[in-house]
Every structure is written in C-alpha cells, then in structure tokens.
Image (cartoon, one colour):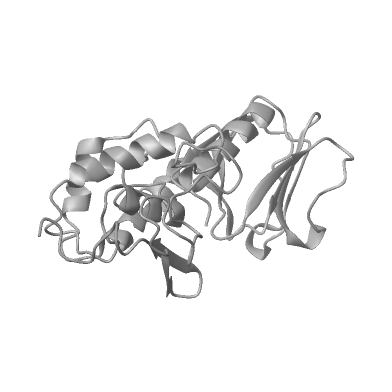
Length: 262
C-alpha cells in the first residue's frame, strides 16, 4: 500500500496539472458512477488526506479515490499512449492540456464536497496535512493500550499517512520490536516525532528513504531485507507474514522482544 508521502506527492502533481482547468470529459469506469458527467466544471484543487485523494470540483462535487495496494494516478498529454492497460482504468479526467487517469483504484466515488467528512473524518491527524497535531496523535497512540505497536502505527485513525515501510523503519530506528504492546513503551512522543520527520523529509520524492543514503537499494534499514545482514549489527533481518498483503521486517538483535524498558 502506498505510503502517505506517495499520496501527498500524487496530489501535488495532480493539483499542479488540473487546478483551475475546466474538465472537457470525464469517464468513471465503476458501475455506480458510470453515468456521472462532470464535463464543463472547473477543478478547484486536488488534496491528500492521509492516503485518500480528494479532487474538489466546481459546484460542490468531490471525486474521492484511494490507492489501497496498487492503485495509481498518471498524467498524460492529450493523445499520448497510456502506460497501463485501459481495462485497469477506473477514472479519466480530461482537460485541454492534461489527461489524468486513475488505474486500479480500490475506491472511486463522486460525493458532495460537504460530505467529505463521511469518508475521511475518521482519520487521525495527517502527518503531512495542515491539521497535523502531535499532541492529538500522541494521545491517540497512548490510547492503544495492549495493541501491538506495529498495528497501532498502521491504524489511520491514530496518525494518517504511515504505511508498512514506515512502520518497520520507525520501529527499527527506535530499537523496538513491532510486536511489543504500546502500553509500557516509554517514549511514544519520540515515535510520533520520528514518524513526522521521516515522512516530511520524503514528501517531495515519495521514496521512503530512512537511512539518508539515496543510492539504489540503500534507502531502508530493514524493510524488504529479509535474510540480509542488518546494516548496524550484521544479524540477518527477519520477516513475518501478516495476512495476505502485509509483511513485517525487523532485526532481532537491534529490536529485542523483551518488554520496553526492561
């Protein structure tokens, strides 16, 4: 699933291309909205809210999309060949200078702008949003109690924007096994602050570099490095499958399983 900085970057690029432009054609390839036509309306802005994209359009209309695991928005010039097959397209927004195509979107819906709270109002403070509130994020994280730290960091109602990459990397950098319960971890404020700093640093690239090394294959400490030596201690990185689509990576030496503070 894309991280919040990837979604933020997509919103920035889409907003730069579409904001202020009038839609010349729209095509929503999902049954519920297949007959909706927004042509003739102006795109006001495109914003990210956590991992959600909100295309705010003239006359109080919002296109709400979510990437989930492998969705993507791509920009093309009119007549340019698409880089993904047409059958994967879920939404097409055409203007005179640009064509925006959303492929493999898990959520594609047209709603009233006044109703955006119904689809994103449940989210916690957005790590890359104007509503970011570290005190509220800390309060929500502290309230997770005996929940596993890794699961709590992925919960978008705690902090909006973190995905599996940052979950693994934040836990490594704090020296915490992601399977530890939140209760008893002494410096939750440090976890919130580190999460904010990491995602903020990557907001213009969407690359999730946490090591400071921009070279190919050197950007993360533990993520997707199962069986390879830890960059700090040399111990083989471990991997645990959690469900069909989520995997946790950690170093058993740098992130000991014993309870935090013991």
